[in-house]
Length: 155
Picture (cartoon, helix red, strand yellow):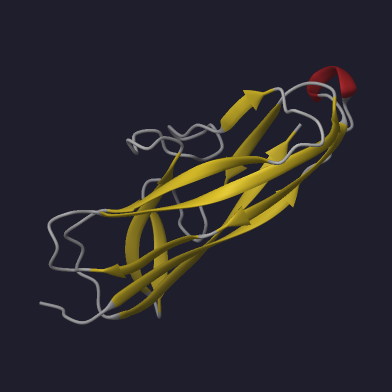
């Protein structure tokens, strides 16, 4: 039986991708920034999952076509579950596109989906919510768990 405080924080890094194949993907210029998901204190004895949100904001200067946004696996070998770490210990979690936390936000592989495709409004900040969840019932020791996920905009 473990006791103590488990603090969980997810850092998000943004990466803009420029595609040069006009016919296949469109061309343009977009920026992306992210606000990480901070789960706060996870109660190892709690019966309910720990939910929190973060966000990705994008702004496109010019795009001919649609965009999608992918989130990486972070430090985990798979998308389900993603894993936060503390000195080799793991705490499972995941990131979702929907408030019901049913659609895992990934890169459209391994049962995940990406945001989009959408036609972005030009010169306008668009903020998309990231819904995070740590499932209940994990045996985790006290301390701070972290992971870094990269958000990538594709156009």
